[in-house]
Structures are given as C-alpha cells and as structure tokens.
Image (spheres, one colour):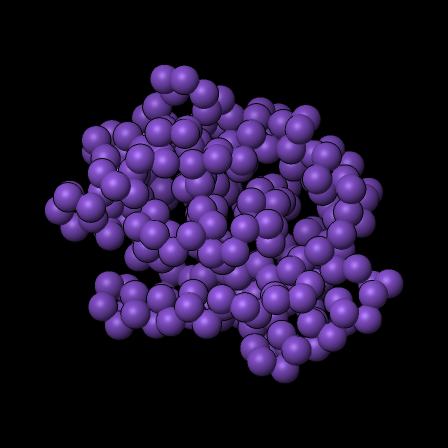
Length: 255
C-alpha cells in the first residue's frame, strides 16, 4: 500500500500514481488506485465517473460507506481498479475534524475492504499536509515522493518528512519512505541534472534509477481518459514509467 505524497502542487503526483499503477497492472498485478485529491484528476485519467452524485471516497471517509461500494474497474484495463474522488472531498478536511479516530478512517475502510485479490493499493494524495494526506500516511505501508527536477525542488520537503516521522511515531510505526521519483526531467538543462544529483546525494538508494522525462504525451493522456501506457505506449514517458514500475516491483520482491 503506497501513498504518493508531496504537498507541492504540480510535481507529478497524479501522473506518477496513475502510470505506475497502470504499468504494474499491465505486468499482471492487480492494482487499486484510491483518489484522495478533491480535484479528482486520477479518476479522470482512469476514465472513472466522478461527477455529481457518484459514490466516492468522501462517503467512505465521512459516512462509513463500504469501500467496495465505490470501487470501479478501469475500462479496458482488467487488473486496474479506481476508488474515485468528487469535489465533495474538499469538505472532508473540515468534516473529519469532529469524527472519532479521524486520522485512521481510510485505514479502517481499507482494512474492511476485501483486498485479498489485490497486489498493490496506490493512494494519490492532495497537494497539502491536511487530514486527507494524514489518512493516506496512516493507511499506507510506504510513501513515494515525486520530486520535479526544477529549482525549489527540495523546498518544503523537510516538512513532509517531519510529518512522516510524526505519523511513524504516533500512528503508524511501520510507515517507511521507500521511493523517490525524479519527474519532469529535461536532459537539455544543467539545472535538471544538478537537482537530480542533489536529490541522489541526499536520499541515496531511495531514489529510483529511472527518471521521468518532461513529455507532452504525459500531459495529453488524461484528457483522453487514459494513462500514457495505453494512450501512447511507445512514448518516452510511458517507457520511463514502465521501467520505474519494474524497479518498484523488483524492490518489493527483494525487501
């Protein structure tokens, strides 16, 4: 169970969640993507209805609706499933405050969900460190952080890592920072390679060898309700995410 988190917006969290999940599912793994971002971008990219009165993660967290009631299979991807988010989720941050065990509501919902058939659960977090992200970190076994290869890349990361430490200390002792993915890498700029070197020097083997390039195809795919894996499997973005998924799967078997 992997939470994909970074409180900075625009670093490729949703793109990474969706495409790693799609790549793993294409290798025969059964994967559930839990969309925990009120913008619902992961749901859009996986062609999962998330408008109007569609039951979503909000009702699971706030109204105790069983997770099984909202999970949908992704069209044309037999091993991939999505728990969608609607705009209602934006209100969940406030409504969760008064609920019992508010930090563990997602963990409880996933524990009650029959996940025996699943190999991976990928949780796409919102760009904040609020209660939704806390719920993801309490539920997850590990954290994956996408970092874009641009100026200010490491800015604010200390706060996220402190939160991970706090959650490990008080709510989820087995949580670990397992993976850092370098995204939006532009090989033509010196800055990108400097940032990549800096991140590798700081985090060592936690950083995947595979870097995700800047790619128009990656940004186009969601508008067609697809991951880049099905939209353009031969593109540099798709091949990079396929390699990244292989690395993640290999690490999981080794550990």
